[in-house]
Image (cartoon, rainbow, N blue to C red; front, side, top):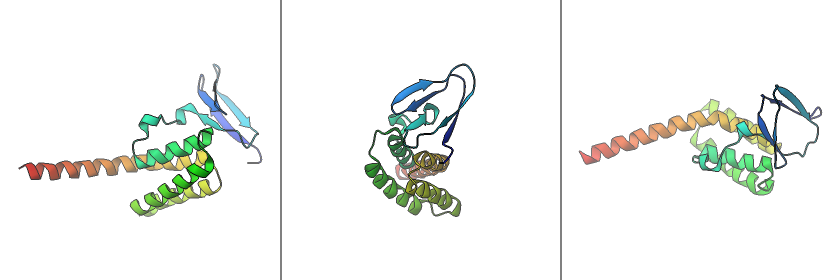
Length: 146
């Protein structure tokens, strides 16, 4: 990142920099962060721990914890690598494999926000698969009760 990270903020939007919550003023703002080691997260991109209830969301949360400095990269990267391998096995379709590969490449480059962005693309797919699995399970339960 030779030019630095650019963050575009909405009026009154909050973001986290190295554990400090900062709120934008009344107007849209564009900031350029020159320090490469700063831990930065827009709060609209943050996942609350109670929301990390599925495999993809748990991986997203791990990437978020690394990004905010709340989890050592060595620990989180191991968990992310394992999780991405599992996702790759569970989602063999080419489109999903491309997203997982992008997340893996971002992880290899230590670009945790980009890992989060890729994982966010998989969230609707995961939700759909979980709904199908629940419907099948309910159907099987209904058949066994009959």
